[in-house]
Amino acid sequence: MRLMIVGQLEGYISQAGKIALQKGAKVVHCEDTEQALGALLNGKGADLAMIDVKQKIGDFIEKLELERIHMPVIACGIDTDARAAVKAIQQGAKEYVPLPPDADLIAAILTAVTDDNNTMIASDPAMKDVVNLANKIAPSEATVMITGESGTGKEVMSSHIHRKSKRKDGPFIAVNCAAIPENLLESELFGHEKGSFTGATSRRIGKFEEAHTGTILLDEVSEMHPQLQSKLLRVIQEREVTRIGSNGAVKVDVRIIATSNRNLEVSVKKGEFREDLYFRLNVVNVHLPALRERPSDITELAQFFADKYAEANGVDKKKLSGEADAKMKSYPWPGNIRELENTMHRAILMSMEDELEASAIHLQQSSATPTPMQAANNAPDPAGVSSAGQSAAPAPAAAAEDNIQNPGAVEALVGRTISDVERDMIINTLEHCLGNRTHAANILGISIRTLRNKLNQYKDDGVSVPASGTGS
Image (cartoon, rainbow, N blue to C red):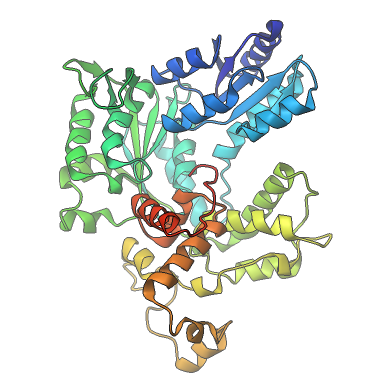
């Protein structure tokens, strides 16, 4: 856990840092937001920032977003000024903490940030086997490729492997290769020197340097441009990076974990992914089962997310009713754990009963089976079984009719253009994901770049687009 403290506050915020150190966090202190941003750009990474409420919090958060630095910001103040607290939250702070600091409160904050990214639920036998494999290979230095459908928890598994490795005291740096524009990804990974290209107003340390002595996660590496793939291959071979605009190489000591929701062997055959890079990354393969293939975990995951979002929204925690539990177990979860999480977030807000009732759980009946895109991305099953865990043969017509939840849905599409239907599907999926662009793109089976282009087009046409959510 890396904590960045910004400001003075008559020594109280330094006291908060001392408490965090006692709880095992690594702490860096900066005088103001300008110094904090400079530290972050120069490789002093952080998982959480605690900042004096008198600092320019909104400006700081905007600059973090501009630089694609993702971390929660918590505002701190030495009084109980409600206006200052509300303003800080409005500007993007996740929480407001009164000072002098309370040791239990600081510990709770650190635990919440850590647990939010590291919770591993694996009671189902199918998932237990995967965790056992991950635990076995974690202490090694082997490069790991984690595969599985979108939303199966590949980043959580990556973090789990890091925490079980010999590098657990080093940084864990995640880079979403699909979410960063192609022309910026090289700079994000390898860094750049001041003036090396338009917009490079200062030197920036890349993620490989920031991950030195630790682990770097290349999330959705299959989305990386072939030209950049060759540069990544050289970094893996030489264990050194060269910043854009520099002639000097910098040695890096990192373990690489990569993830993909695509069948990379197919991508290699199509010429979309370098074969030599694939073999370098796929030293050990950890394949995560789809949620429908680990049914014993559905109830536990659902209750975990229900409790999480009840606490986050200040509402009472509720146990799942028997009907709600049965409803979720009968659903195939094409969006996997990510879809389950969003469903439970919405359910806990809509629930009106003492228990979380079935009617509060809204499922996409049109998503009863995986999309063709999802099916194509999954590795073929050697037993001749479809990704849904059932025979690939088509169901009888009578059975299909029995499963139709809304028989008028198809008729309602008649007379509408393909572009109109596509627009509504994208907007509805984005609303379902609470504005999170990355999650919506994964569920839709399109790249984040394609999604952003579509949304920009809709905005130009005057269509209302959901605001960007957390982690977008």
